Image (cartoon, rainbow, N blue to C red):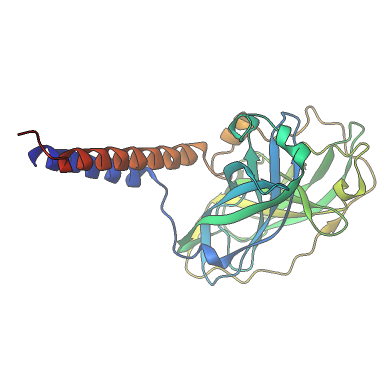
Length: 316
């Protein structure tokens, strides 16, 4: 009995540690709607799902995470992954793009050979949507923008952001969502913090954001970018209280003229994501979630085994 109590205590400590590592989950992920999505294989050989969410609830939401399961036409689940939305503070009615990466080595076959069976569906679920009582400084506007394909087939949007308010905006980023002719999201992208990193009232900063891994040379019509939307994110200042009403926005049509040649093609990979800490959900949060689940499961297994051992008749 004493041994059982000791093991139960150890399990409780492990479970508490695991739960402390897991990111806080709001009780209202149901207010986040997945509007649409599509998938492609990126230049590194990963299965990528991109799409768009919308906050249909009354509160500002932060730290939006999704889980995804890919099913082939034979009914088998082939891959599972988690990803996040490219947004820090999602105010009511606002939309934001999301990105979920399925690494080949973490699928059922250890590669993407199962794609030959045919993808039947991808089940996407909002697993986290944290309600917060603050919102980002709203007085940043896209002063101008123009999108087009360069000579290398990369779709770029260039433009400028203006601080139309009275406070200094710090670490401004631009998030892009790219659509095909039917309005389906087919690519996403984001910038590093714009220069200058502190944008004074009335000042402007230029930006250039490209579509991750979606080369427009020779692609089918369904993969052609015809319009885009831009979302501005800022780290400071953060304001308290109800968020302001969101102005109506519509996708901006593509510009046929090419943009200047880039120094490198935009790509969403681990090194790129880690350099944009406050816009893209952290890999550390994913690791904490996985570690927490593993610790809890391990504790449960130990608990069950110990309990069974203590229930066995003792030799007389």
